[in-house]
Amino acid sequence: MFFAERMQRLGTESAFEVLARARELEAQGKHIIHLEIGEPDFDTPAHVRQAAVKAIESGFTHYEPPAGNREFRAAMAAHVTRSRRVEYSADEIVIYPGGKPGIFLGIVALVEPGDEVICPNPGYPIYESVANFAGATPVPIVLREENQWRLDVQELIGLISDRTRLVVLNSPQNPTGGVLTQEDLEAIAAVCIEKDIMVMSDETYETIIYDGQFHSIAAVEGMKERTLIVDCFSKSFAMTGWRLGFSASSGEVAEALTKLMINVNSCTASFTQQAGIAALQGPRDETANMVEVFRQRRDLVIEGLNQIKGISCLKPHGAFYAFPNITGTGYSSNELARKLLDEAGVAVLSGTAFGAHGEGYLRISYAASQDSLREALRRIGGLLG
Image 1 (cartoon, rainbow, N blue to C red):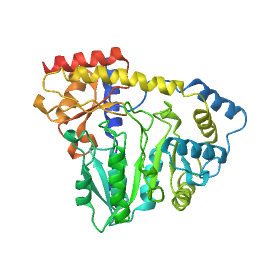
Image 2: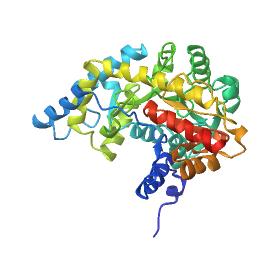
Image 3: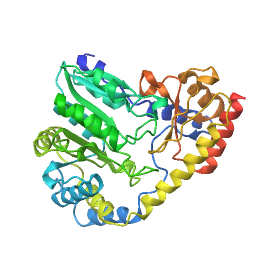
């Protein structure tokens, strides 16, 4: 079978491969604690579910405009204006079936073969994968534990060349839980403005932040027109299976993304967009409660990991992942991840699933009950002695 050469440049997401292996072990009767998938273990809020059911019964089962339902885009613009503290209109919003289409179509729209895309490493693997697919060269900006997993602006400056087209930011960050400060963003913005570089800001974990206030680079003066915000409802509203995401950008970028939506998806499901309106305009109590529960789990997991021989772990400032340093165990990241799954029944991800600079680390999702987390810590500690 012949496939286009570009298919060789497209990667995958290891979390789903580990999940498949864990399911195989479960089918054999083994009890697995799932800490590999980045999915809130909460139900979608009841008023959001009810809005979707009502929408279906009311006939929201037909095509919508490719950029999204106008009412939803207006509600989305109002939300982004409030949460990012920079004004957006409905015409600057595009709705997608999930967060990944915003990343994929954004890179395809902005990047040409031969361009360079600076991506965080360790970082969400889709950035590098899609940049490769588009014919660009991913350039890693290394995130380091000693810098609280924040990128070093001087290193960023050193990576920029005359081929640099796009810088990808992710804060709060997957897999490390690192959060960029306002000062970080201002320094990055100054570089991007001077060098005329676009920024894709993945703000998927915007609401899941434990200390201080969330900041978006789009709010820095001069950056709105050169920033593409991508976000989704999966994490903030526990809506992973609904596949609902959006982008906020200049009108010119939004037009290009809408053209791609026409060619790829036609539109996002109409009844899920009605659920999105309910999520934005309804009560946020459940989201606030979810974040508080994640905070308690974070504290439990970090304390427990730091008591295990050979492991140390910084306390993440956002998202719901721990990224422990396991170099003291004597195992590589892949070796320990496999051993934990096969021998201890704990599914985690190797740090190298997020790039070469993830070696020496694991990603642990604490989107699980405290009882499950305590048992996972007990098993990890037992395995490592």
